[in-house]
Image (cartoon, rainbow, N blue to C red; front, side, top):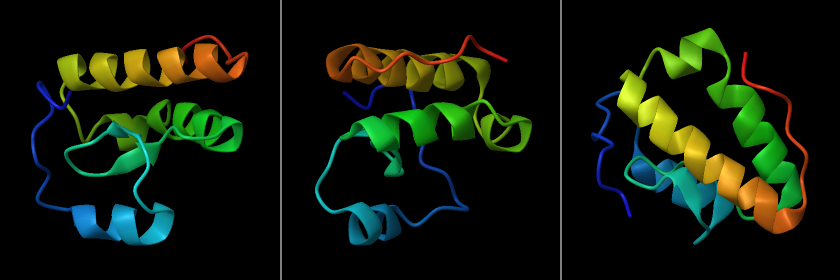
Amino acid sequence: MSAGIDRRDDVNPKEGERRYGDVAFADPVNNKYPIDTEEHVRAAWSYINREGNAAKYDADEVRTIKDRIKRAANKFGVEIESEH
């Protein structure tokens, strides 16, 4: 599930678990962008589309994260904005 995303030096994955619990993340390696609720899906989409956040990943990683967020949005019936 986490293939294709590298461990980031600027992130402590345990922080994501502490904040959100044992939930699904669009970036499960670093426990970033929780996608377990409608609210989290909307927030994840908003955050990954911010230039500063996306810049911390390479293009393939961003695509993987966005694909996971889109699948979660479908699951919850969340309509997300087009990509920025």
